[in-house]
Length: 267
Image (cartoon, rainbow, N blue to C red; front, side, top):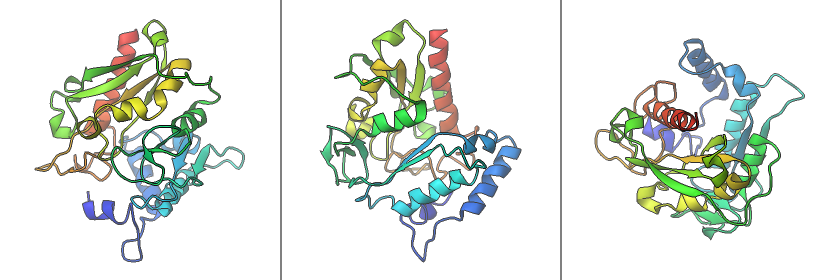
């Protein structure tokens, strides 16, 4: 619930604004699991996690990403299974990194898509899902706009969500069952600010076409009054309320409703 802690301690920590202790965050997660606010934390020990820290990223410092890795590792009790990948050898700025789309690799500016000759979407999907078929030369499915309002309890604005989101549907997924990957855009990267560029150029869709994968691109909006979210970020510090990181969080519930709607559409 602290914008100060979010901006300093959790993005650019220093001696004056240190990172939260891994042990304290682990204890809080365990307490939330015991109370049923989140799923069992034992799942975090074997969950596949892909982490990236750009060498020119001055928005989120590399020690923050290293701390995130330590958090996940704190739940892993196996000396044989290490389901975490950490990429830190790219000279990237703060952005979604692509093989051939966007700004210069070391940029940290709209649309926050950087051409680093590195296919981050393919790397992370392969780590999360296992070996994949090679991507299509270019996307051949449909990017569809859908109504987010009904899936956000009728009031998307209250949760800093846009009225509409996007979903990419490969041609094969119009008639066959497919898996779903949820791709969250970054701050200042929603449709209001970059249009459809993240949904079209982040790199997921070519992989989706050849691997029976639907990609959901939910969308936020910027808020300035009552709810303060001027950069259109997803809620990672509690601007929608103290339950933001639990099953009761309004954005969590809305995105889960989107996933369930996709499942219902296929059934």
